[in-house]
Length: 355
Image (cartoon, rainbow, N blue to C red; front, side, top):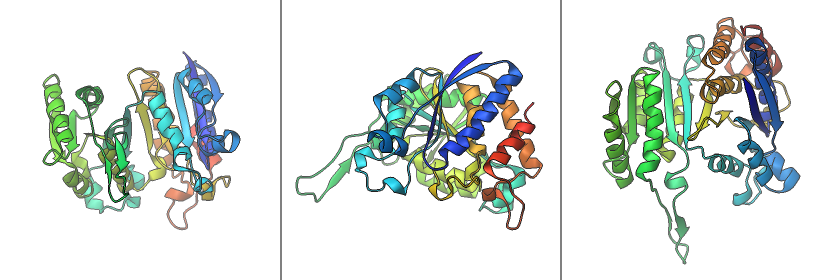
């Protein structure tokens, strides 16, 4: 298979972790007989420094011409003084909207060897954590009408959704659940919000077409409690933009290993944008200490969702699991006093186990 992948290294540790992910991609392509063409794209702070804007039209067009996009990270305190409409993070919103990416898929998985890093009690996570959160990305309160009164004494933000927006992400939730444990939990605030009631009505109607998938509902405040009380009850969590933003961060922290978790942002077709969930960590940039695992696992998601290469995706995931099982640790997941490896050595250890 021929693949065209746009690389967006970004800021901080972004270039380092993307470099290791590309090494894994190249080795996977070599083993399984694929060809990859890369194009590098500036976005975020690095684009502000070069061009004065976080995302140029040319950069978006290059991403649109690719089969998939691999993003490192954007932002950092260097650009704190930049006006809000030109901050590095605007590149993310520009890429998501420009590429038509409305579904964010974020797995939260705890590896048995790293379970002591979780802030939860061992008896709570004894049965394991393997949750897939599907967050709607391009609607809701973040994109609704907003403003302030003329006297500046009040402000408003509008949460608005259409049935079409709900249906398209609900479809991905049900289809994902079929490949997992067959359980979708819709998280909303239907006891208060009219938009949540529309979510519940629409998803409930769609659920009738998936008799093999169990559908239940949970208010967002209860869901936030249940994630720390009994996270193993969840399989696929489906929710709107703001709730998903908050819950996915909570879920990532209960695994105790934010440097290990990937994500995928998808639209109608096969093109997606793949990135680790962590930030640019400018304080450790260039020091060869960043954990590249989340970016490498994002590559596995890319192979699965954009190229339908399940065998190749599993090979990468198994290589990561093998490295963890064998005690390979970067500084962020190592115990106090435990030996750890650098960014490049971590990538090499995963490469060595890739078959």
